[in-house]
Length: 85
Image 1: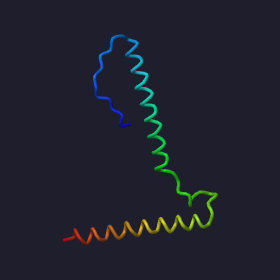
Image 2: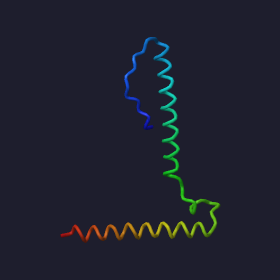
Image 3: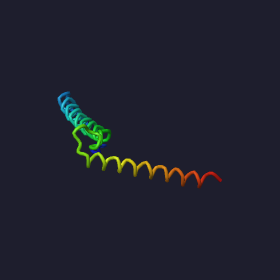
Image 4: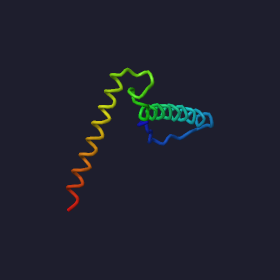
């Protein structure tokens, strides 16, 4: 993704243009696959909510979710108290 080539090359034939185009297409396809994979991992279901999860994973997931909600509530409360003036 960060392999941006900024040098401007002069092409002498249509074959060179076609070769460069195919190379760029392959790089774009690789980047697209990487983005899709990262997107899928970002929005995957937590382990504790799957059907075959063990009870300890479910409890751990609930505790983790509860801690996240508590943290969000405390942050909201602190921001509210700071900016209500």
